[in-house]
Length: 238
Ligand code: C5P
Picture 1: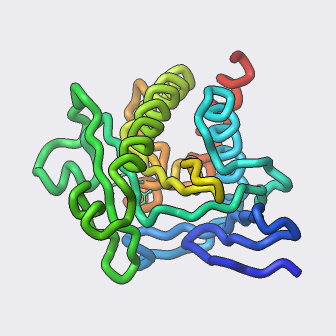
Picture 2: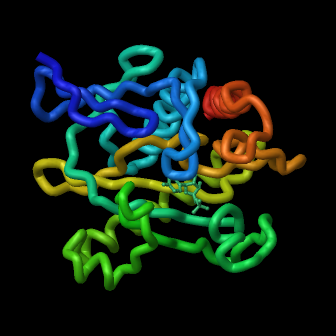
Picture 3: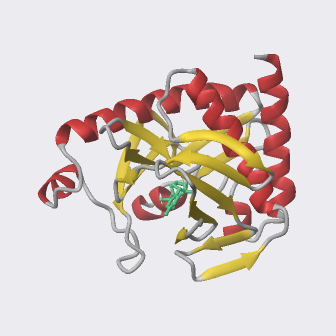
């Protein structure tokens, strides 16, 4: 019997007959401001599942270890069960969002070297910023684990910056999550979609990510579908 293990803001995780495999269901839901803004958006679950599948398959092809197994329907995928590190790993190539507001800089400032930040995953505490020594003090991860995670994140940034650029988009920033398989291997988990990254059109700088929803700039599903279309076109050439 499949059991609902977890309901997040935009996904559900279900157990399967195999104790090492979970089924992820992408929901037609968008949230912002840590769940304070919430809406049903038809078609969003499908488009995020499609985008995340393309990205995880592309990363796996390029030697990035991930939890992804396969897409099984338009809104579902199978993934390896992992023990998630309760940290969000954010990489920023260009100033935007909280970086811009926190430090009073214009959105669009390109960094010479990517900025790396970690946040503690806690809805009650509003995902506070957490530096490495704080994460070590609370034994959330070891130094070696954090090093391995940032090594993988940097490779992901190089691969996806190039891929999105070829597809006509700038990868401004993104958030990754990581987990451990039962044998201790660290793998990229969660999803990669315009819900957890910022993408700007290369020429017009138009927002092509969740800022469209956060800032009420237009119809999020059609923007995400445009991201999917561009990615598909580019990956067909690879
Ligand atoms: O809001 P902020 O500027 O810190 O977000 C940086 C990046 O991390 C953005 O791409 C955002 O979508 C992503 N993020 C996320 N989940 C969070 C916080 C940020 O996916 N809880």
